[in-house]
Length: 88
Image (cartoon, rainbow, N blue to C red; front, side, top):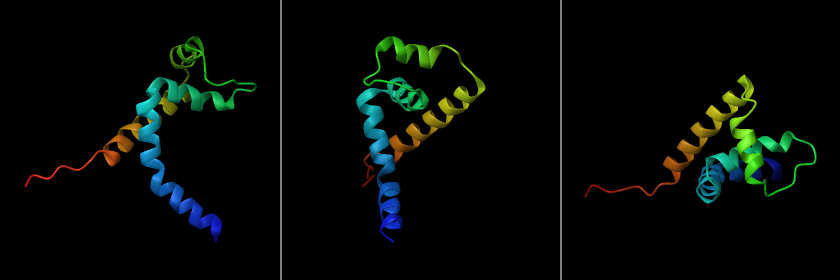
């Protein structure tokens, strides 16, 4: 029961957290940080050279799919967390 409730709460806040992380670090650093979680012995924060290598080098189909998913989620999160404007 508690696990389900925590899952619901985390899901409800995911857009705001993702938008805040992207705003703080930028798309490339956030993507590289998430991508590098699969790399053993990764140390954070990632050096600029590592971010550039992850984002620009060894571009595979899986990495391209992940980048597209990542940028789509960031765009959605930014839209969801943007303050609404009233026309009145």
